[in-house]
Length: 121
Length: 107
Image 1 (cartoon, rainbow over the protein chains, first blue to last red):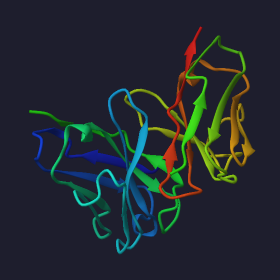
Image 2 (cartoon, rainbow over the protein chains, first blue to last red):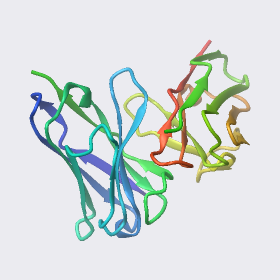
Image 3 (cartoon, each protein chain N blue to C red):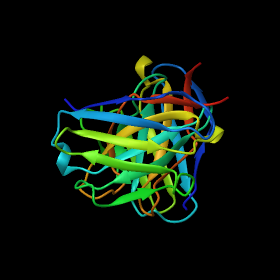
């Protein structure tokens, strides 16, 4: 059974940093691209960032480019999203998502339950 | 980026009724469209990929159709567990984008 478990969310002040992690199990992690999607309160889903299966290619939404960094550790089946210079508009539930391909293709076949990030003073 | 517009925003139906949800793209996405079900506090679930293919374990009452710019998700006979938010998503153009969602609520 595919499982994606996010952690690391919480309350952070504007301008602060936070690192989200996603622990994956139930599939060959190193064979698939991974993605983060977020949902702000009362809003729809927004793609945030993606990483290829080897970790050598990363992609970011314009809204987070230069502030967020996505990495993966294929030896530990984990995904990490380093978020810097956080803004109020980054407040959202962040979902870890498995892509059904080696390179990000936007085929989101499994999702985690999400972790809440709140940016507020 | 491609904008997806879902309609209606809310659908109020009784169990056993047929639900028809629409998703319109601002430009052609070919058949690269997926549908997800999302219940509060749960992980979103992939229902349909590439416009008309049911994902693993999805009941036959869910079906998808369409191509180009107009797509439909149909739930043939609503079960109590089907009341949820439904999102469409395109992967034809990068970045992938989502519709704003349709809420299926019990009448």
